[in-house]
Image 1 (cartoon, rainbow, N blue to C red):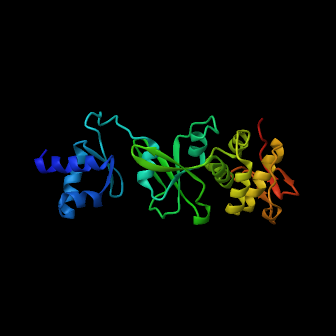
Image 2: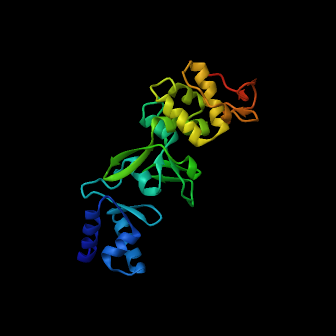
Length: 250
């Protein structure tokens, strides 16, 4: 490795585990074409790894290059901005499911060229939502990176919105048996503003005997399925306007 390249690598390492092409351009003083060549050589030599468009991580000196990995939440934070770990990944993080998801679910309001990417043999699924639905986060610090994770109550709301991203409505039913702030859950439900989510939550709360009152104005016209990923066969709960198309396991 040339001394100038080694010096660039040292400067990048001092900035932290993650850098962008723009960062490298700033610290190197190289023109874009030459920098692309240098970064390509560094990646080929196992010194850095490209994990997204113009996004890289610096591999530790002592790392076994083919076996090194980075915490999946840190990778998620590098891949997407703004972001939050959500759905099944957040359920697992909060201990609200016994299932271990093979995919890391990332929620964002940003437009992305792709909705799925694999890094370090881990699959990441990127779900874009409306800005009004992007709220309710806790903060983690991993590898020096600030990472948002949907809190317990927002995770429940998100999973009711898209049950297929958390293993099905049955996983939400089980999660609702755990300790939750029911007042916050209803506040989030109001803010989220989805009739389908309100109907699903109202039904599950009834089944579990939870002291939770869903605002009547959210129970809108039109019948929606309890689990939209399952066949639309079952009985209709007339008051909630909900098609109960799955049996919930105790």
